[in-house]
Amino acid sequence: MSHPAAMAEQTRWLRIGCAFEYRAEIETPTVFQVQPNGDGVRVTGERWSMQPDVPIRHYRDIYSNPCTRVVLPVGSSRLRYEAFAEVPDVADDVAEDAAEVPPDRLPDDVLLYTLPSRYCLPDVLGDEAWSRFGSVSPGYRRVQRICSHVHDHLNFRYGSSTTMSTAADVNASRFGVCRDFTHLAISFCRALNIPARYVFGYLPDLDVRAQPGPMDFAAWMEVWLAGRWWTFDPRNNTPRKGRVPIGRGRDAADVAMATTFGGPHLERMRVTAEECVRQG
Image 1 (tube, rainbow, N blue to C red):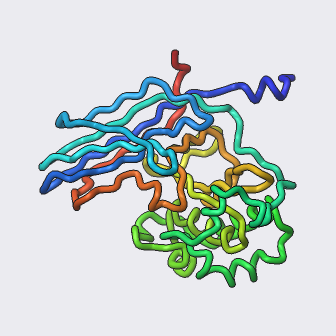
Image 2: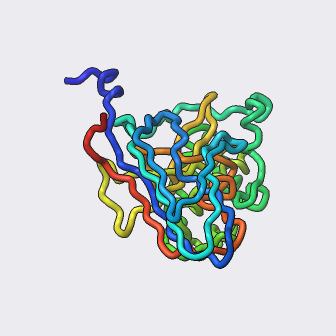
């Protein structure tokens, strides 16, 4: 039998990346967020390409997320990012006894994640949050109860929400995509004074049944309990392996895969997140 510590050190390799094809009527400044932030993941063999060849600049935003700036030229263009990621061969940590932290004892930089934001509306959903979850024992189990409710309440459907849809909107319609599941669960947590932040990244189908349809980016959340952040996934509602975070923020407005300062047409997008042979 393998020793638990040795098992925890085992890793697996992923091939990750994405490609965007745009058509623009005018030159369009654009910010992409597609590069892993490196937290708990070793990234190697990164390659960027832009056709036609235009300058690519990199920086980190106020949340320390890696961002990439380009100016899309008039006409057709294609940006491509590829890399390999080494991830732990373990699923998300679970600690059913992890306790909530009272607001007056939260770290200063965590308080932000208890407040309303563009898509997460704890003030609007506060009454429902307290009526549904206020009597549940505080801590990890209460957050998991929130995730289970959101998982069962919403139906996953592409195209059922828009860039304008808030957590309150999808709560009423009962349809959304992974970002909407995450926004609603975050809203319920914040309404209960539990800090929760939005996470965007790559999520391969490791040791689970492959999802139908093309691979896409994924969204989940992290919740502050017992002095640290814990991963919760209201869309899948089960611990998963192989998460590669790209960025964290208050909600999807802080971690958009592409922010365009103009109106280019996205003609095609491809996302890759799959296991591959060991690199290096």
